[in-house]
Length: 130
Image (tube, rainbow, N blue to C red; front, side, top):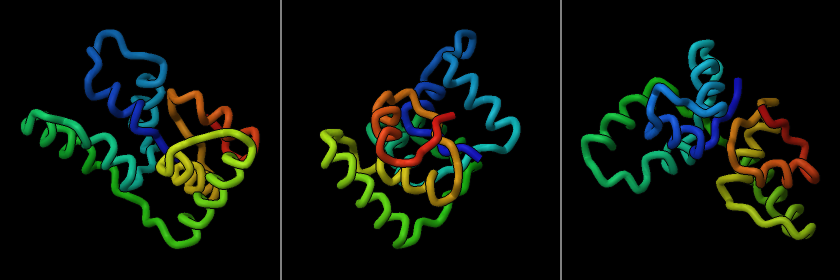
């Protein structure tokens, strides 16, 4: 299973199907093999900012095929410790990014993202990129 960041999902939903990026090709392959793990914060990021109600509903329905994993207190605590560790080492990131990292570490999953910040995070926290 792989945690797919919102940037890949967003591109997949807006990109022309005849020219998919490498990240979207990887997402398509993961979907074909039931290899995607969704979490609520990613779902929220993907759906946020969609102005057209029909487009919002289409994407919301498409994402329903990927149930959210339950996040417990230890995941949030780990995310906070990752945030603090990276910040102490001069690396800034969003709370959602560190929540994704914590989920990946706790569940022993890889992360698929186009965000190069994850390579910086991996210098200090034990994440694996897909």
